Length: 153
Ligand SMILES: CC(C)(COP(=O)(O)OP(=O)(O)OC[C@H]1O[C@@H](n2cnc3c(N)ncnc32)[C@H](O)[C@@H]1OP(=O)(O)O)[C@@H](O)C(=O)NCCC(=O)NCCS
Picture 1 (cartoon, rainbow, N blue to C red):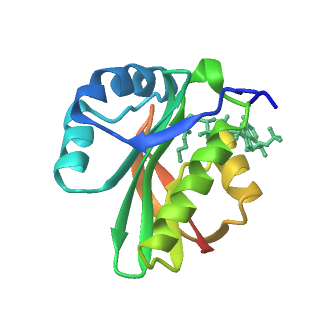
Picture 2 (cartoon, protein in one colour):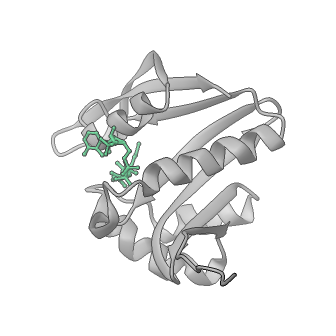
């Protein structure tokens, strides 16, 4: 019987040499992107940082902080050309598995109320709103609140 080889997305720990490619996506995906230092500090701090590649092409990434039995999602991004194809869900399911393996029981995140794609993705995954942080994000005019969401793992 011959094996049928199919392309599958690959998750791997983010490496420092990938930060240029990650930053290129970050700057396309957000009006207020993370800086190079945000990513290098995350790697230096030992945060759970992952890339998602399809046939070698970087399509997305995520950064999560694990502390005792809690996980905190700091960044999840899919390159604009690759959005709405299921990679966001795939990356999030990977983070769920990693967080569970590290003993986390709950995953928290912040999202802008104006972020339809983020809220859509998190709602689909069962996240619930648990609070609001006033003026958490920079915005065009002043600041924007953050909606705080959480899901049991
Ligand atoms: C949020 C993000 C990571 C989602 O990634 P994605 O690969 O496009 O998401 P998926 O294709 O896996 O979509 C899964 C589900 O999320 C929801 N969703 C995704 N994009 C959406 C959008 N633009 N509007 C509403 N719901 C959306 C849908 O329920 C979708 O399922 P469906 O396509 O069957 O309707 C991506 O849009 C992104 O990188 N956005 C810019 C960065 C960002 O805002 N990140 C979140 C910061 S809090």
